[in-house]
Image 1 (cartoon, rainbow, N blue to C red):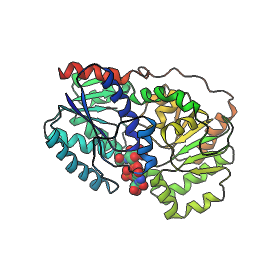
Image 2 (spheres, rainbow, N blue to C red):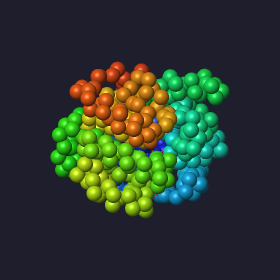
Image 3 (cartoon, helix red, strand yellow):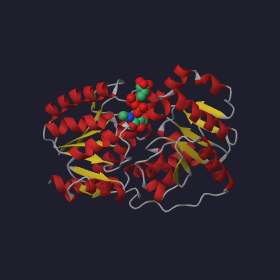
Image 4 (cartoon, rainbow, N blue to C red):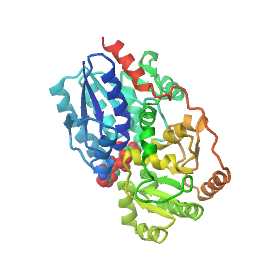
Length: 367
Ligand code: UD1
């Protein structure tokens, strides 16, 4: 069974690694072929994750690189179709919601190759997010929809997806997190930051809606600086965000506060998890960090008005604060006042066995 697994951007690698491991252990004749589209290409955004997660070298690298959405999606579609013509796989597996996900699924479905989507059914109901468009379209052309939570099943059913396509398997990112947590605990807090355990917060910021419009970015940075005056904030800066900070000149303003708001390079997987584990709380607009903090029972303040990870709000440690300065400072004051965080029960099937559930289903289906 030749199965093409597609990855392209940073949030994909921790979803592919557990699947490759589970396929290897399954005793079934899976013949996985790993394709890296090259959407992310910096060492810190890609190679470092392959090293930390002990992923094999990609069999094929498409070298797509940066560009507009149309360019990135279009180039991937063209190059990935060539791979499919040559390799003629029995199945294509895509994960998450990045441009590579949609482009690869689209190339496959047009050639009548079955597509399996891992992390299906999530909806933020905000079509201004490119990821929401990618999620919707990928789900509607996929044959096997592997969902992380019951709300994702409900979304798919509401959109008319036949029951037999939907499989509630849990969150595959949690497989990766649990498999690596002990290694992450053994890492020191990165890059000589010299911060006390639970004595700092972590910030990640890269959504176009937050960083691409200078007025919005300025407002957000203002409230983050208010927080930084309450507790040191470590900020691994995404390349998109660094560009925007430099273009707008805000980087200078932040430099003046560098003893409280610590700007560092994007971290590799194990270092980032190590940083999260020892933090007091996290502020983020990332899709992946919300479920990770829920799994680790770390308070998370999400700098967006909506989330596709609804289960992290209802059963996890996540709170939506949007970009409202007053709300952020109020929430931080509450978190700072509580000495311990209550340990949460993780959402159903966030138990490290998601990849093996997927492999069991594929084994039966592909027989
Ligand atoms: C992409 C995903 C997003 C995911 C995020 C995680 C889409 C639509 N978006 O957003 O869902 O949460 O990755 O990181 O697919 N760049 C570099 N080096 C790199 C990669 C990117 O410098 O290794 C620069 C690019 O030149 C570009 C910017 O970062 O200017 C944005 O990269 P892009 O892949 O378009 O989207 P992300 O914002 O990273």
